[in-house]
Length: 467
Image (cartoon, rainbow, N blue to C red; front, side, top):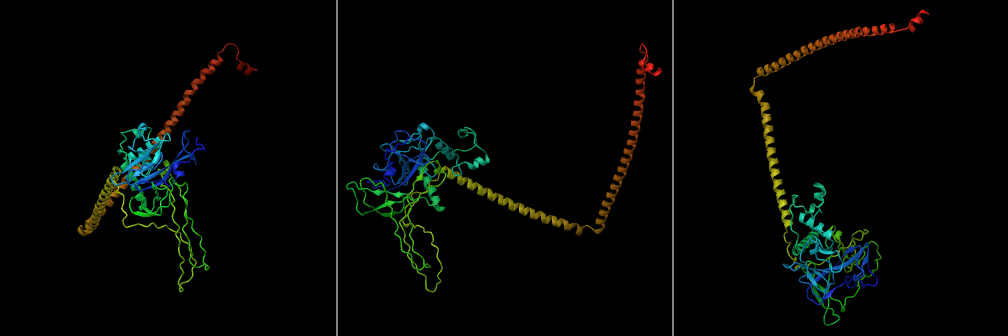
């Protein structure tokens, strides 16, 4: 269990990492939750529905500097053509070799047992073995978008051991390498931006001078997450070790105007920085992070004299991020096997739609032709056949039908007469059977009376009759 005498985790004690290297980078704090930690865990864990282990996710244009990072931190190299993933072990940065499904070959966390480095389509996380196997199965089946829900609705739950079966008729795709995983993460973030879900802007590094303990008010260029436009940033004096707290400027209160109908000045208030979780649930939902924005003061706008004074409702403020004309994307998304399969499926669906449209058009034309032919045939007999022939055909049909009805009536009457005759004969047979039954019952009773009279000794019946 975590002890209260242990120091705080480095990403919490020093929330603003710095480096003497010229490599620009950004960072974002993440965490995963453990039920328990070993006794030799060197830091104090945060208790919130479990024990939280925090770490930094760095992103830079090149290899990670040696003076940045602590055990458990990760580094994404976003240099075009050199995408790579590094993880900080006890003393050095180590390159992630790629996805491994076997537990003995997984990249283990340097401090926490049972956690291994893994890349989903959105994040780089320290996963458990079960989480890695599930994510790998979804990735190989191409079901990361809906997490297998479509297959579950159509096919049903997978049988035990079905993920390892190779004869289920589902084509498998290879697992993404580090470069493909990073390209997929950048692609998903770009898609979220296009859909209006801007990912949280990570914090930028602080510049640390190796010769002096502080740096003057000089400006340094810091790259954004996409590695595109440079933004000039004033570096505040920094000590040899970053401070444990970050000063957040507070907006100054302004005096309200005397006229309540005038538009009032207001400021955009800042919010505290929050860290995004990096557990398995983070792969299901987009991360939520609130960045600190400087207060933006809105001037008082007086209405014209000719305009009527209407009470004004204060609108929500939107932070405007300046975009330079030199913003260039880090690299074009690399087409993966999943994207190629998706494009092929879309092309096949388009061809099928076109074929069905052509078939529908052909059937409509055929229906129109048959309708015209039927209409023509209906109108043709009255024009070609003489009226005498038509009346003769009608009379013949009527006479044939009448004779047929008369024949059926005669047959019905004959059947009724035959049925009545059969019922009469059946009654006679039943009467004869009753008489025969009565005739055969009399001889049966006669021997019984003779036997009663021939019994030895005086008969009780005769004795009673004589008396």
